[in-house]
Image (cartoon, rainbow, N blue to C red):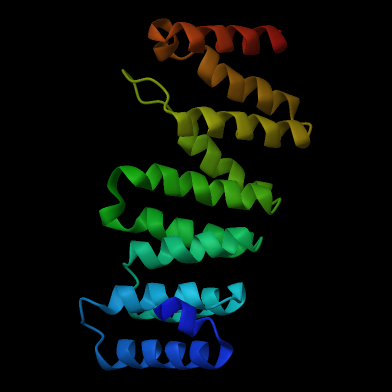
Length: 192
């Protein structure tokens, strides 16, 4: 019933004002997140959502939830610079833990989509590094492929050979899964 009544433009504006007022008056309230989500759900304009989220993030820079929302709306709107910025900020938050690799990949991917290859390549190279005694994760595999794509687009043949060799000659390839060995074998044949 509530959302049916706020879908009317006059009620929508009242709801949004009330939500922003509540958040301003009670910034430490446990209900604040619900009011933020309600405001976001009620706002049809993606740019206004992105701008409001930026204001809330300025007050709560460690809020992963707000940053993820902002990155998601920016991605849908094709705003790669905002996506890259939010992903970089998310990766730097200590609470991100194991998700920091995913966020760094998201940052690199946004830079890649914006065709900022000079900034994306070092991130992809870093993500594609496989620690001794471990196997590559999905972020490493995707990062390696996109690093090779960037080098290919730049017609950097020596870079492609060097980048591919870091994986083909790596110690972990000896204990790689059968599927990974098959893919590496196909990659090796492509480059010889």
